Amino acid sequence: MINTKLHTTAGVKDYLPAECALKNEVEAKIKAVFDSYNYKCVITPTFEYIEVYDGMGGVDSKRMYKFLDRDGSILALRPDVTPAIARVAATAYDKTDLPLRFSYVGNAFRYNESYQGKLREFTQAGVELIGVNSIEADAEALIIAINSLLAVGLEDFRVDIANVDFLKGVLEEARLDDELSEAVTDAVVNKNYVEVVKLTEELDITDKLKTLFNDLPLLIGDISVLDTAKTLVNNAKSIDAIEYMRKLYEILEGCGYAKYVSFDLSVTGHFDYYTGIVFRAYARGTGFSVIDGGRYDKLVGNYGEAYPAVGLAVKINDIMSVMKPKEVASADVLVAYTDDGALMALRMADELRKSGKKAELSLLGSDIDKNKAYALKNNIGTMLYINGKECRTMFVRETE
Amino acid sequence: MSYYVCKGDGIMDYITFALAKGRLADKTMALLEQLGITCDEMKEDSRKLIFTNEEKKFKFFLAKATDVPTYVESGAADIGIVGKDTLLQENRNLYEVLDLGFGKCQFAVAGYAEARALLNRNNDLRVATKYPNIAKEYFYHKKHQTIEIVKLNGSVELAPIVGLSDVIVDIVETGSTLKANGLEVLEYICPVSARMVVNRVSMKLEHERIAQLISGLRSLEELK
Image 1: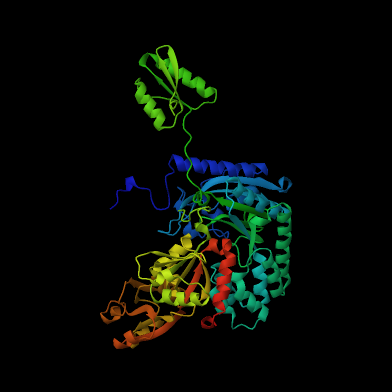
Image 2: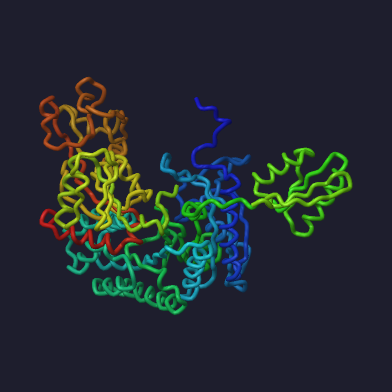
């Protein structure tokens, strides 16, 4: 038996000061980006009735932390923040308030697989733009994604754009029956291209479509994949989806973001609630995506008025995994004192803080050398020593 | 969690392969050699764990088959070569891009001929296997049959013989071990063979080189 009081349970963790400082900084920088686009920060509950999340095409209820309320209702720790914000938009606002721009930073909870190094409590920072279905709205979400990553200092990353309508059109064109269509979709969602080829090679479909199914793993990359894909399909839905992505790209290119953008035509949403463009950002240094986002025009309608929406979630922990822990900022001044100088020391420390200095009160007694050693170890440059009514300033590292 | 060394250390330019130890690894290297990707270091008898082709910027390491998906999912390796059996059992989030065609065998339900009747009954079936996920998927989702699984770690054929289970779910290559013990294949579940899998991030950030590799391998006679 492990001594459970000494350990954290699987998938949760302590953030010690260095990591905590990094987390706060990453969150602050990303929040500042959200603010600069005038997204208003909201906070929704950490747990809610499970119905808010269940059956919305988001996280499977099997992966939610569930428990009972006193009246017997089932509650869930939020597995994802977007449905709660959709609920807020549909219930607390009306049409005249549109468009709504919300941002959030909060923890979400999911039963992730054991022993795979995946967190079960993790932090997401996101934005939701509700009430508008336009290409500029989609472009804004993508640009926010790019600027969030730039703001935290990442450069080697790619935002991968897809459009769920592309694959829908392809499956309609291939006239697959429901069962086969689901099997192909599953295989595509699971990135099992071998299975896609096996399911489709015997079908009575055009050679071009066969090439398309065959080449899905190659239809990833820069804007040229859109041209290739266009020659392979013969249905309005897929072609519209391609043209939409091309227009989106032109906007991003015009704003100078083209180099961060790539396309993957085989992507469907990671959640079923996505309806149009979907995107994921990948950064060098982690095997997982660092931002997930997309358009979800049907989700808000589950809670009332049906407003179209687009949003994204930055996965703070995955971003942190590619960054070095921060050095925790040390105090500017250590205030040490003899017994009869205590009151003065406390008052001076307060004055220092009011003037913007980070002042730490020494609790080590009046031994100067002991205090100096402490200041040196903790990287505190200046020491104030109060002996009775006399005050001396010492520079701890003046010998260097 | 950060497995890569960040850019600037020169390490990023490598594409790293995780190969399932044994025959699969040898056959893979033979295929890659046809594309001009060789690794002489690997042919030498050494205690090295990672082998490098400096000129073409490839790295290779050998791992236990069941660990290959873990290395690739986390990004510790960009590409993995591993049997479909392992992928089915591990169920990780990876790109499965190529069927390499070798290492062919079948997942099957096997047992005494008399056990065949049990396979159509809806309860009480005891199934011994090294692959509980595959057995579950097959019986629950394909056959809609509730079963009891006994997880074993080797010599699964023993289970029906000593009365531990009614049938087994296992990989069958020639069926000779089964035959020698009076057992037979009762139902085939699915064929398996070696697969090339790719990490999700590598698939994006190194797409040009990986696409080239996929196209190259596809053009080989063995894969047609």
